[in-house]
Image (cartoon, rainbow, N blue to C red; front, side, top):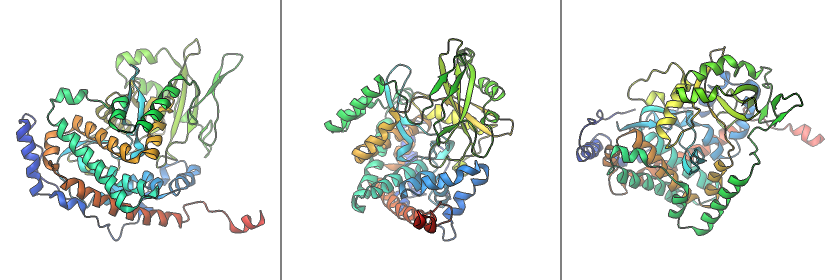
Length: 463
C-alpha cells in the first residue's frame, strides 16, 4: 500500500487545501486507479472462512447459502476479500471516517424523530476513522458494476453506470468544498428532494406511494419482531424462524448475549438524557436474530423492553469485530470496545443518528453495539430504486457518500485531488469493471466449493 504526504493544515484556506489535494496527484496519479491485478496467491475462500470460527457454527452454512445466490450477493458478503485486494492499490493520503463496506445495499431510507425521510448510509459494521477516501468510493463503484452485470446489463452499460456514480460523488464533493464546515455538517439527503432530482416521474410516484403506505401501515416487516402478551401480562417475542428465534441453533441461550448486566453496561454509554429515557423501560424478553449476508452467524439479538403499561421498545444488539479496513488507517485508533467504533462512526457519518446508539459486551467478552430496531419497511425503498432505476439510485448513493465524507474529511482536499474533469471517474469505472470480473470468478469458486450446502443427487433421485 503506497501512501502520499500528510494531511493539510486544519486552518489552511479553502484554496490552499484544494491546491494541496491537487498536488497529491504527483505522488499517485488519478489514472493509476484504473489498474487492478489481484495477488496471484490470494484465496478468496480462505479469507472468507478465516472469520468462521467466531460465528454460530450452525449458521455458517446459511452465510454461504446467501452469498452464493449471485455474484452481487457474494460481493455483499465479501468486504474482507476486497479489503485484502485494496491493500495493494494506490493510497492518496486524504482521509475520512470510512463506511468500510460501502456497497449499493448499505444505503437506505429512514425516518427521523422529526418525521422527515432521509436517505443515508445505513450499515456501519466496518466503519473506521482515518482511512483514505478512495476505499469507499472504489467499493461503491465496483458494487454498481457487479449489480449491473447481475441484472443482465451489457458491460458497456455497467461501466457507464459505475462512472456516473463516481461523477456524482466528485461533483457533489466539489460543491461541498465551497461550503463552510457548519454548512457541510447541516447537509442531509432529504428523500423527497432527491427524488425530484431523478427526472423520473413514474419512479417518483412509486417511491412516494411506498412512503405513504409505510407511514400508514402498522404491519411490521418480515424481519421485524412481533410480540404477544399473556393473560398475566408477560410479554414475549414471537419466533419467526429462520430469522428470529429464542434459542441459538448451536444450543446457546441468547440471554447470555443480552441480559440485565450487558444492558446496564450499555446504559452507561448513553448520554444522560437517553439514559433517563431508557430507565423507564424494563427488559422483558430476548431472541436471536439472523441478519444480512456477510453478518450471518455473528451474534445478534433483539431485546423487547416495555414500560409498566406494556408500551414496547425494541433494541437490536449486534456483535462487533475489528474492522476489515483497520489496517488502512493512517494512525491507530484505540477502541476499548469495537461497538464503540461502530457507534462513533455512525454518529459521524449519518446526518441524523439513532438516539439509542451505545455499546456493551457480554460475559464471554464478545463486544456489541446496540441501536433501536425500527420497522425496516422504509429500508426496502433502496431495493425498489436499485431494481427499477439503477442509474438514478447509484448516483444518489454517490452523492450520499460524498456528503458523509465531507463531514468527516476535508472536502477541498479531496475535491482538489479528483479535479473538475472526468479523469478520476473514468479510472475508477475501469477499476470497477476489472473488480467485477474478479468477483464473478470468486463467486464461481464458492459455487463449486464444499462451503455451500449441495443437495444429495441420490436423495434427489429417490424423491
